[in-house]
Amino acid sequence: MEKWNQTSDDFILLGLFPPNQKGLFLLLLIISVFVLACLGNSGMTALIFLDPRLHIPMYFLLSQLSLMDLMYISSTVPKMAINFLSGQKSISFLGCGVQSFFFLTMACSEGLLLASMAYDRFVAICHPLHYPIHMSKMKCVKMILVSWTLGSINSMAHTVYALHLPYCRSRTINHFFCDVPAMLPLACVDTWDYEYMVFVSTSLFLLLPFLGIMASYGRVLFAVFHMRSKEGRKKAFTTCSTHLTVVTFYYAPFVYTYLRPRNLRSPAEDKILAVFYTILTPMLNPIIYSLRNKEVLGAMRRVCGMFSKKK
Image (cartoon, one colour):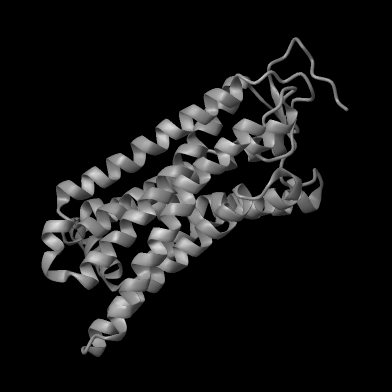
């Protein structure tokens, strides 16, 4: 067992790839995904801001999803790439805390935001006449603020607790970022009570919103199949299938990772699953929402035309 150097507060991140040519090739793929995610999410946010026709609750929520995804992938990939390319594996105590805080904030906030987006579609399709009342701009803003606030509070609690644990064993984290469950085995105290709190927190911020989303879309799909208009049914089904695709990519690996007992988890499997919700999902979200949404594609054409006229 590697001993912790008492003169250093740094943690060691083992990373995702082996330090060889194959690892370099895979890292370049991840960097390409990171660039696509940054361009896609920043572009989506700017598009929604610039086009007045997208200034409705559904797209306000989508802009926040893009912002969260942008911060999400930026909290893990740059540090992983820098460590790999420099041959260094260390991350400072403060850096580990900051990374953990932002990762957990985005994870919890995005789960709540996806539930808000599901509620928005439920009201729009099942109660269209009451939509302006149940999904006003003010209520949309409140949903966004609640998602960010609760996510930040929960993240701060977990981060502060993890950083106050006595790490008297190795400080080598078998992951590519400072993930709290990956840090717990390094503590020299019993963390069973805290692991139970992680389970409760995951249930509240991921499992319950997921069940709410499934219930909302169950009602939505029931209403869609009973629509008389084929065009309306097609549009509603396209929107719902888009949201469900995003939800599946995000929740499935997340819930599977964090709701399993420690004795059923393996570091290698956790790292592979983490790639889905920390790297691939932020890249796929803007692609899914833009390519399968006529309103977004139309906004792209209008914004591009607006800039071309100025030239």
